[in-house]
View 1 (cartoon, one colour):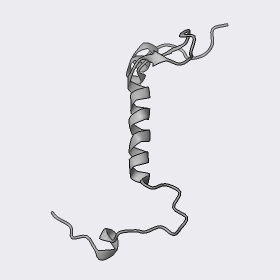
View 2 (tube, rainbow, N blue to C red; view 1 turned 120 degrees about the horizontal axis):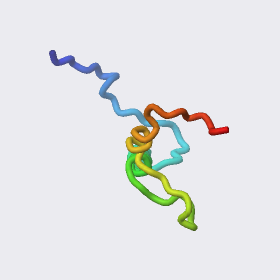
View 3 (cartoon, one colour; view 1 turned 30 degrees about the vertical axis):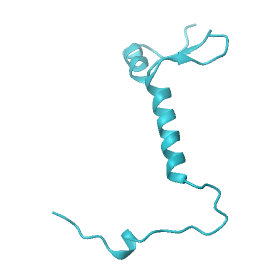
View 4 (cartoon, rainbow, N blue to C red; view 1 turned 60 degrees about the horizontal axis):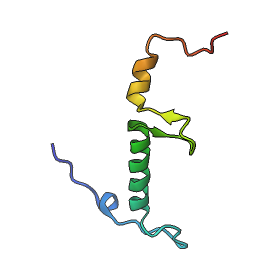
Length: 72
């Protein structure tokens, strides 16, 4: 079924001044893109290349069935 949207649902919202962001939706899209890249790729965390990050799916696979408590 197709629901008809009301005028309130389709009205353009204009926020009051001051406008701190010119394009908040573009900025949000850039943040989501960056976070997705961080979660789904390999990379170095530090400048010395001694600490790496791995994709979240790989990390979850490696940790399944293992205790996350520190070894004594």
